[in-house]
Image 1 (cartoon, rainbow, N blue to C red):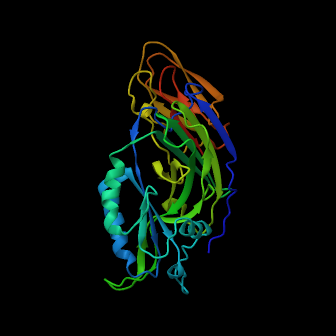
Image 2 (spheres, helix red, strand yellow):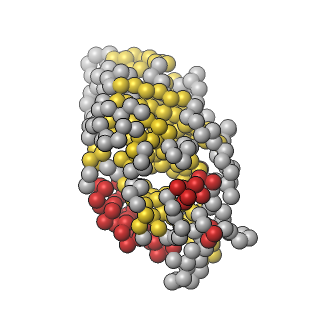
Image 3 (cartoon, rainbow, N blue to C red):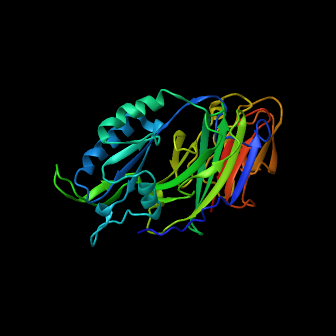
Length: 351
């Protein structure tokens, strides 16, 4: 069974109330957005009825795209691997099974609104997606290959006050396309089954990381880290971040690639002469480049770190359509570049 390697406390916690430091905030939008759906699927590699439920979950993922995120939580006695079989058990998975009273598989929860068998998932997902969330969530993740550590930033923006006074942030690491044994009563057992969305670890406590200020206009920024097991394929891994009330019901969920993934805020889709294009390459080592709407006057681009501190400024000559910024002197990490009056663009520096 996987042992926890993460410090369960966020290594940095920052709170801002709009409009303070909103120039640095770019992972999350500030306009009301629909709820997104989280399906936590309770499963096991020796569960012969589970492949049929996997097919339902994967079909819903194709149907709903980024609006649906799946976490496969392996547990129970049928998750105990035999020799040569992958071990998907985790301490967090066991705790989740216990917390939600899971006593058989396959079952699942959509936005933590009660256990259901696979036949009920589609209607529950559709119901969630028809609602508006009181809070938007954004997330970025960067893997430090030298230290074998994931660094994750989560941002919240409250567009309305939720019903409950306290919310919780949850952050999980999942791994996709793990090939190994799966018992299947219908189609015959599989020696090389494609296991999807397997929970590997939580970066937050099982109960979540409390958010005590949830009034409309509140901006919350939290950072987390996780030591990564070298047996996991970080190229197939995702960070799943979601926020819900203290009672468990999920408001919104987002999933990004574990290495260099990030969400896009509403501001990021603005295209105008005050906006930078997306940064390239990703990640940047020595120099980062942007396209920019040409204007007949010089402008100044600024680069901020994740706390909002300006670390670099550079003048763009009049009429120039591509700019290059040296980043060789900056530590590895996540930065934000912007022009006056324009949205911020994420810059990932990694070597």
